[in-house]
Length: 106
Image (cartoon, rainbow, N blue to C red; front, side):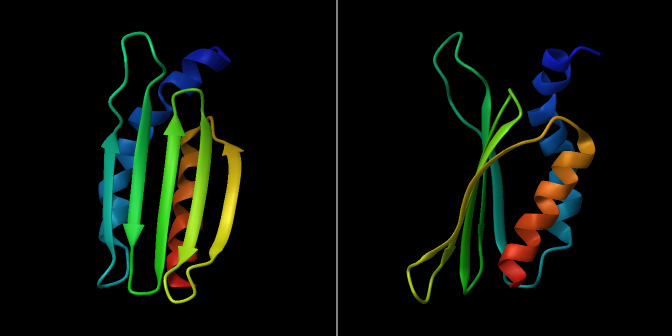
């Protein structure tokens, strides 16, 4: 599979992994995953939001495999993580979701 073909399925893989990952979140965590609306011909993107009493996490994932991850601390109002990365495989998605879980558990 060519790199472009692999990256194009990244969002589908995120949706495939989401429910199992969500079920393992700590009690009280609220998580949602949605595909972003887009103009015709624009790149596909999805957004993952997770909120706990202490943290707010927002992840934007594009079909190119690019990812923006932002983690905020609700008590201080500070940004703990603001990074850009790339995922191109199911393993990369699982690592991303593990990092999100770690960010909310603290």
